[in-house]
Length: 308
Image (cartoon, rainbow, N blue to C red):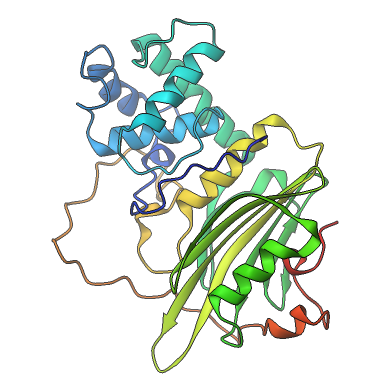
């Protein structure tokens, strides 16, 4: 399936996107740190998590990895390395040479920059996620959140009120528009992910249940639509967005470089065993009601209606 294998390890906590913090000069410090381990027989297992994340994000942007940026060097990451090596015509070993690693990081950084992929925190919706801004028009506000589009791609940030359960929304989304679901993961009272086709177009949806103090919970997330004529490079967009998505105030998964030029910075200190729960991101206004969309009434987001 073009760009929608989505064999994600969803149980893992989404970690920081360190590759985003490489210097503008193609991340020389990070490349050097990775090269210290690339020739080792224990390549991968010997890497600290922050360096594995650099590797994973680079592999996402070269379209060789579709998992989470989780800092764990597992079978999916090694398989992605094999895919990358085979695609560039090198021996498939599962261990990157110095020159392969440097080429991989440079290619990934270039693709991410080409797409203009940056973290967008929306206080109207109460979510934060990486968006390929250079591929899309300026956003417009909607009653359910925010919408970007181009000829081959559209992205919606979504915020729904408590008039429908997470399960009801999930069930509705997998049944409408004759969708052919290729990946479906639902965790009750927590989140879901759906990947599907509408004809030859690809649809991807991520939604979280967000508990709020002294008021009903909300559902917040995003949807992606890609046309049948989408470029192969668009395969990287959905896994990159998933690894950057959050509906709370934990900024470890943000993908934009920090202020001051985007210099590589070390991993944050190890968290305590039982860290305090992250608070929901603040949101303004009122969440949109979903039930009218189920009945075909009113102005509804494309993911609950029909895409262009």
